[in-house]
Each structure stands twice: as C-alpha cells, then as structure tokens.
Image (cartoon, rainbow, N blue to C red; front, top):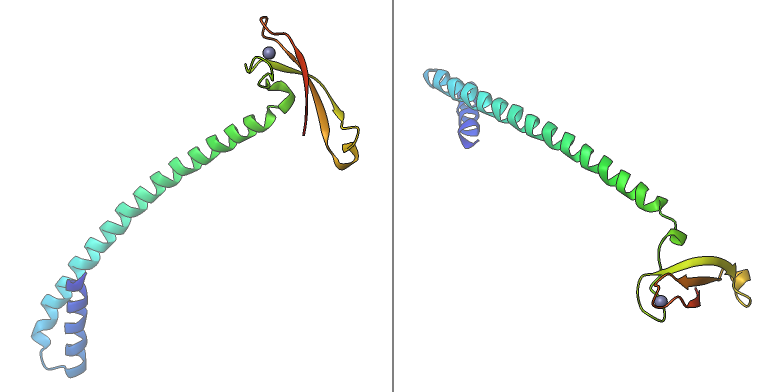
Length: 126
Ligand SMILES: [Zn+2]
C-alpha cells in the first residue's frame, strides 16, 4: 500500500514541479502494479464475501426453521417433571384459570404422572 502512496506522491511532486519527468514512468508502473494487486485482492475478497454470504444466509434460514419448529411445540405437548417421582413424565390433563388470579391471566394446570411406578395427579399454578 505504501508503495502505491509513495508512487502517487512522486507523481504529485513531478506534476507540481515538472522537473523530474524521467521519474514519472517508473512511478506510473508502480501505481499500475499496486492497482492491479489491489484489484486482485478486492476480487478475492469479493469471492470470499459472496461465499460467506451464501453460508450465512443458509445458516440463518436453518436457524429460522429451527425456531419455527420450537415455537410449534406447545407447552401442553411437553412433559412436566412430576412433583412426586421427579421424572419428566407429568402429562398435562387440563388447564383452568386460577380461581383467585384467573382474571389476571393466571392458570392452574392439572397433571397426571405417566410413570407406571408413580401415576399420581398433581397441579401447578403459574
Ligand atoms: Zn410421578
């Protein structure tokens, strides 16, 4: 990079003073070489960026799909950890508004444990 800046400075001095015109040709050659190198570098970076963009878009799409799938799973489909046997086998039977706080959106959920060794019913409030 500094070679390019140096060459530009030389050309600038030559154009300003017009004394050392013989130095213009090599300086111009350096400018051309450096500009070509930069152009190649930019092309390389563009290709890398495009590849990354494709990967990124694909990954974002996959993550969005996963989020959508997770959001599809309703809480009622999930098993609760049973209060008695502490296994994730509590199956939601029903959900009612809480008698005291139902008007505030609070619910009471009734579960039955599907663990054959337990089978107890219990409830949970929000
Ligand atoms: Zn249980």
